[in-house]
Length: 237
Image (tube, rainbow, N blue to C red; front, side, top):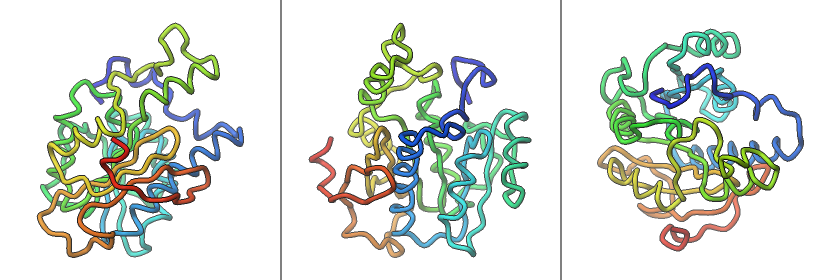
């Protein structure tokens, strides 16, 4: 993944295995935002990049149309093995986000969920994600500074000022959308606490886009995936 910590030292699974109701509510809001983005698209194929143990793959799969084919990839072999066990119907490949063994434009949609904050070269990763995507990207990162504030509120990583180990990049919603706009057209930004979940278009047209115009609004997503009120994107940056 091109991260500072060794991949095996990082904790990708605890938020999915914790049973605390607040954690569950936050994750429901996160995947609710993804569902909102997906509800506006027509998808026949999708790729999740850097899927870790496959917990997110397991949540994404039922959100896609039944006819859509989902593939996934992960760098570390140990995690690929776990992901395959968790998602036996999804083909997994071991590969780097910086060099995906996929033809250009081979998937309608590419996911990169909670990945870019771990990377030393996020622009190189975005370039590769755009290469593989035929049209759409759904990308998420922690929303700063709220991510670190919430960590400090629960007395986590105080000596690191709330920064989660392995997070080497930090973006506000506006800052992240600005970065992605260097590579693709940002169509919608949702902010389920405490993430930014962005939909971007890599293709030239918008014939399959069922939003309210070529540039959608953004909303704060609460727990449980409720939509909230849309507001113009510039108003939240």
